[in-house]
Image (cartoon, rainbow, N blue to C red):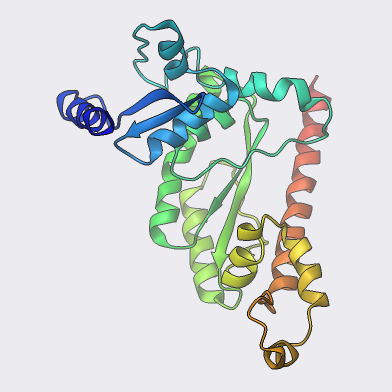
Length: 270
């Protein structure tokens, strides 16, 4: 069965020019899952539908009929209502809801921007990443015109950059200033430094925030004592833990300052 469905998926991509990828939704262990797919992005897009219980794939699956969308950039039923409905019951319990949308999956980014009040855009400092931001103004214009007229870009933040790479940071800022000229989008002064141990192993892989890892690193035994103990189970710590936590704190302070100013300005216009 698996090989047959994989063959059907491959033939579909080859036969339909409009199909960039194919995924097949099935009941697996009592739950809807994308059991077969031709691209790793397909199950990620489908999972967003499974999480909110709505979307074109689920509509086709539940109704047993073809559900067609000419373009996800056009106004329609599924651009973001599912996400909106999922957040609505809990939104009142929070002063601020932050949605971290995955890079590279523009459908999910559009869905988030379709209901967001503000957008913060992270980027690496290499030329390819910065050039990719050229499409952001047009994409946000489309979202404002068709889905969410109030979404505002707070700014751009440089991430995964060596703290000592002053020339690289300066060059990136110059290119961003040229690219974003006349858009009103600022580039934040704080940057998020790159650190494999602190930024990946100690935080993301362990499900921790930067300031939580900072506390663990501060209370850890000195490296030479851990080396003497010859204990492989001892978690490695990074000297960059404190700096990384401060990076996020500085960025949070700057973003919240602008966020409050924008809210005050909107309130004054009512």
